[in-house]
Image (cartoon, rainbow, N blue to C red; front, side, top):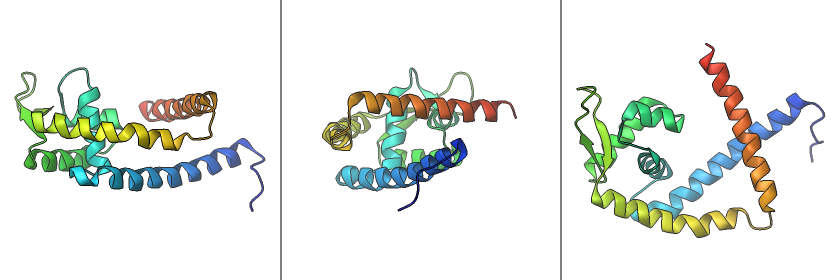
Length: 154
């Protein structure tokens, strides 16, 4: 057993390592959860980002909202389009940057995925107080904002 972190640097390093492990577990679990729908965690995340957007967006904006690489999101969007889950719409502000929209089939598949998500998420928090989850969320948001400020200053 390793000793607890003694400094803020050791603590954040331990947190980052656990976040990497957690991210991999969430992605693997999510892949299993939505595989019968023809989705992966990455595809599900793209569909969710489209749904969460206030208006139709081009791929670059979706990637920004996800904190992801535009080329990776473009590849996923292209795959989703081939499968009839999303469609491209004309962008009145930019000829080449088409807008991305869910099709009726995409809306249906996304709704099915979200119906599976609720009991899945409940299992994550079994035995953990709601206030602890809220504190963890606030902490992760603060760390993310610090990193975003660092990148915006470059």
